[in-house]
Length: 82
Figure 1 (cartoon, rainbow, N blue to C red):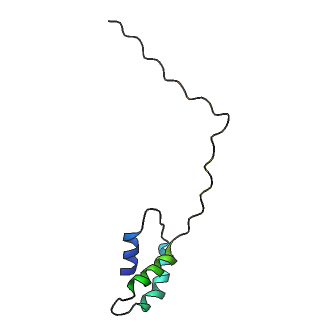
Figure 2: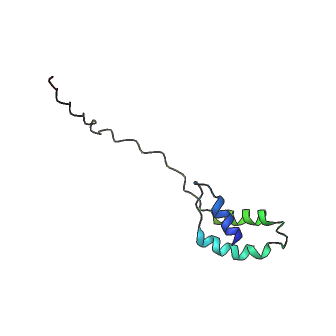
Figure 3: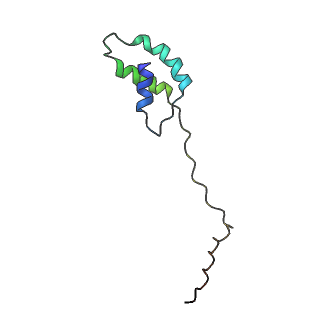
């Protein structure tokens, strides 16, 4: 639980976590933790590596269509006589 919580609380906005994958991987990795937690950081890093979702590479942003209509002009305010 501590491994999973540490990853979730310290991930960045750009990182996406596969929670189901994390649950499976933690069952394999948790028994490797030593009683004195001397390998906690390494085990956590391995769990994080297994749990992150690879983002697809971003495609080039689409250009606006060549025949885009011109922006509408705001209506002129009526003239106020004093």
